[in-house]
Image 1 (cartoon, one colour):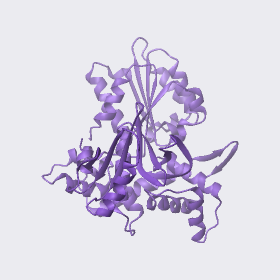
Image 2 (cartoon, rainbow, N blue to C red):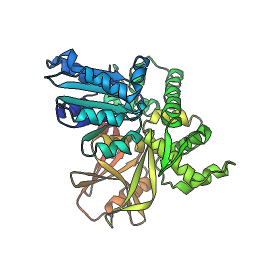
Image 3 (cartoon, helix red, strand yellow):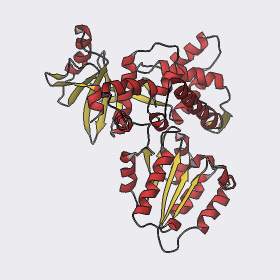
Image 4 (cartoon, rainbow, N blue to C red):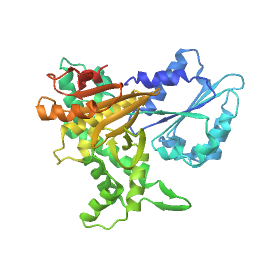
Length: 405
């Protein structure tokens, strides 16, 4: 079992607080394992087993409880009368009207509620309305490189492990399995198809009162491949729809927008808005999309020779999210800064490049940061080990070393 200490500490911090803990993230990133680890922690701190109720709605044994009224009755019968009851509801989005159950449990005394979901849509609509201000979301990602490297019982260098991590990704099971490329791709295929079928095909696209199924799986996969191949590039709904039309299919920009929405709601892709550094405001046009796992990207683009720099950029984006930053794509005049990040009202700037050995590349990466007229920290992350240093206040650091911090 892979220990996810960072997320476990967050759950410990919120223990017994009158607030619902919602753990979200792509399938197989470790949400169920995290809850199991947390339940073990509770038992180690003198919580009795009869104070814990745990249901995983992926288990057919609980199919009867997919009826929200039956689920509520089942839970109420098992609440402790004079002690805290810890309630764990895994993949709760499978229960229609689950938000009514959660809300009713929330208002009871001595209940501490933990729920997980593999679709961000669960936090929209009625749940957000009913539970506004009553829940915190813990956004879970596959393993960081530091977690991945820690699991490998090997004498190989971190640079060698990082090459493997870029290709295979960070899904916990892959990191611990006796693996070869065929087994890894088979496992990634299973994750991808499960997301497409279970988390997307069955989900309704809702625009106002309109409801319709996402039924064109071929279109959905084409869009997901386009987004995978466009990691690190600014794109628009029009550019995606133009690409689909160029392949001989007719599709409207509205349909493309709906399908991108469900891909982001299933946590396959993360949209990143643009930030005007000079004007200190968000820009409405175009954004970038990053994928939840680079192994999944390689599986989706098996015959494409994609730039290692974009893979690195994707990994850095995910790591910035793990470290609690709000991440934007920066625009400074006509120049682009890969990431403008904010935390506690402090801004930092990041450029990401595979190598800075070439003089033209060095100048291309450092110029946008030199043009920023403020005193916030500026960092360039690179895979080469010849460039790190301090260049007029701009830190150049090896990306693997930075990821291991």
